[in-house]
Length: 195
Image (cartoon, rainbow, N blue to C red; front, side, top):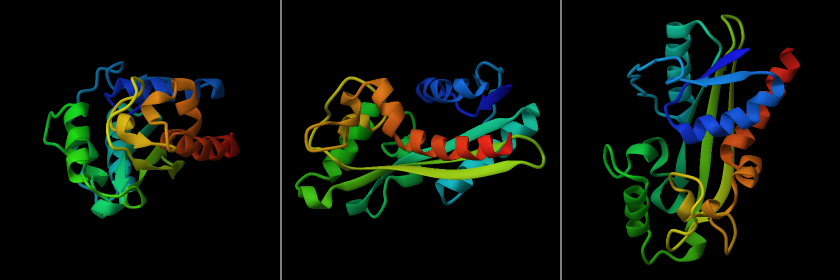
């Protein structure tokens, strides 16, 4: 069954493909479906933004859809960048610029105060009667400098233990432990119950 992943982020699409294909779904991206909709994500939470995205794409395509909204919450910064993670260093900023802005803000902050978590809210609409919303997290802390070549976004500065950033684990390992993987496991449980 074809299911639209409501994103243009190819990194996310790859992760969803690996996670959904074993269940018999054929994940397609907005690009695959030639959808270039500008969706105003004006919710106050990851869950609200995922719902807004899912509803719009479902209306446009009539196909089952999964939308996610995800980001990084840093305890010392009161949960920032939060829902503004993608635009934290300004519209069009590179991953490196976003990471540098965050590192600058955390300069001089001791390790016990650098706690952070990645959050992923998934909103799935299968049809007019079946909708699901789940949230997954990955706990860690903000490192002192970028490390690693894998992943995208804040992965190089997000430490999963004393020595390892999320950008230092391979894609297979990341797909087991990430906030998105944790949310997907919850969603897959819901989808399996529904079959």
